[in-house]
Amino acid sequence: MKQIMRLTTAFLMMVVLFITGCASETKKAAPAAGLSNGGLVVRMLDVGQGDALLIQHGGETALVDSGDVGARDKLIAQLKKAGVQKIDKLIVTHAHADHIGGLEAVFANFSVGEVYDSAIPGSTKLYRDYLKTVKEKKIPFHAAKDGVNISVGAAHIAFFSLPSPIQEEGKPDLNNNSAVFRLQLGEFSMLFTGDIEQAAEEKLIGRYGSKLASKVLKVAHHGSRTSTSTEFLRTVKPETALISLGAGNDYGHPHQAAIRRLEQSKAKVFRTDQNGTIAIEADGKQYQVKGEK
Ligand SMILES: [Zn+2]
Ligand SMILES: [Zn+2]
Image (cartoon, rainbow, N blue to C red; front, side):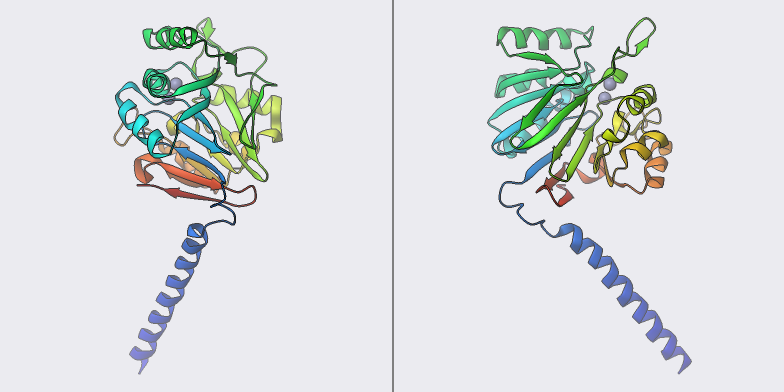
């Protein structure tokens, strides 16, 4: 009899666990109201080690970075799959190859309306070629600085920057001077951070404070230990954190220390190496996140 009781208890516990587990999954999987009517869609595209994010709303498109050179075919295929025909705004966070490597392919496949760039020049041929193409195609080129506000459909983008670039060894550091911006539609918000590290995080907290608070955080620098400080997480207060990186990459990204800090912040973490392309759909009130692997 005792054994039956024990079995029954165990069975009941399993049922409870099953129901609770399912309930939270269902909540996440359920489409938020109005999503089918042209909600804001943000995709962190799976381009391996690098960054490429796509923002679509109201028939307009913004592309944030373009992954590394080797991922360009994968990038173009994903942009086409997402229905992209024209890129209204191209945002280039900084001049490293894992962010600008796919730009030539982007220019070859799509017309680009305007470019917003950190305006800290890179020293590589890849960077010079990108600037050359922008010039040849006469695409308006803007510095992504404080006070610059743009839109993607009805979604709003505000750029954040520092009064003077962070220097390293006498010249501006590319990662720390990445273009940083906050995307907003109604109650939905997402902070884009390029590859900034702790030095930039501290200065941005000093300059903007609670204006950095966002529901979703694009984790800086592929989950490197030198970014995503506890102080930054306390200021941004993200519910959801997205990391773009390649499985088995040479840098050991994401670093455990950064993952630990994200876990402590209670943000739910999604990673392109595990979830594939990560899609967020937002209607201005609710949002849902799903891996498209
Ligand atoms: Zn990078
Ligand atoms: Zn970088």
